[in-house]
Length: 366
Ligand code: NAD
Image 1 (tube, rainbow, N blue to C red):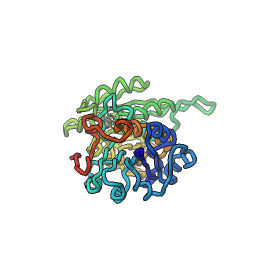
Image 2: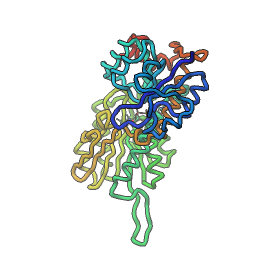
Image 3: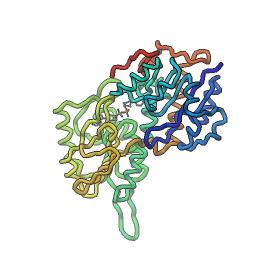
Image 4: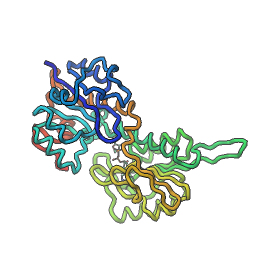
């Protein structure tokens, strides 16, 4: 009897992605696994049930009762976990930080749960790296939202009605999302600069044809991530940035420190010093925002400056976001297989480090 890999229709507000695409269902079947989906699971992502030649369909209760592994994009309601069979596996972006009730629900059912956002950022984990694949979608979409909301054109235009100068765009935080935002701004023809506290990002920003904005603050942390700035570093960063901000038409901010609230980089006073008509798109809105005026999911006007705090940007490009996400999931599922059956090897650091709960025992401590 093959193991059953399953997915439900996602239920988080505005979510349109699906954890298993038709192509990945085929791949899983090729590995000897059975794929079982809730009816309509992929419809909002652009994959109607008929597109899944290699999957079976049931209602949510039927899926949960048969799943050996439940793959999800975002965590379902905690009550869903109680409907899984004891000992089943759960794989997805399980948003574990501060999620005490979710961890308790997983443990109560004696499940084994893997949060893909905890995978170490190593070369071997790259093919499973949901943070990267989804951040790339976020960065791309954030810049399109900025271009759409900006009262100016991004590119230089020479027309009979005069010459339009290109917009000046700053991207704060040059991780995966930031670099994709920079690349998108460049493709749209804006004069683009990028800023980050990790010194190695200078070369990455410059390789995209953008300029690196050097504010003289360096804060490389462990595992390739940034660390939190000290109070003095933060003050120095803010002072240097405040002096430069007035030169930009658009700021897209993506700065993050894993497991921590987003660093507050743009103060109300700094925003007040920006040009009228300037625009901030704060990608960190979900974790509190890089700008202290950001309101998650809302548009804020402050002294002629607009601040947007869009949420769940990958859900807005659900087809490609799902294709990338599902590929990450399937690569991780393959890692859990032994002789065609699900048998996680906890000696493997990718398995061990992403595991939140193992057969009911909570391993994640936040
Ligand atoms: P992230 O989402 O955690 O943070 C976004 C960016 O914000 C980072 O570049 C960070 O340095 C920056 N930042 C944090 N605090 C800041 C501040 N106060 N001011 C300005 N910028 C600030 O980052 P991410 O995109 O997930 O990437 C994190 C790291 O992982 C990077 O080093 C990236 O190259 C690396 N990575 C490795 C792999 C791999 O090899 N498998 C894959 C993807 C990413």
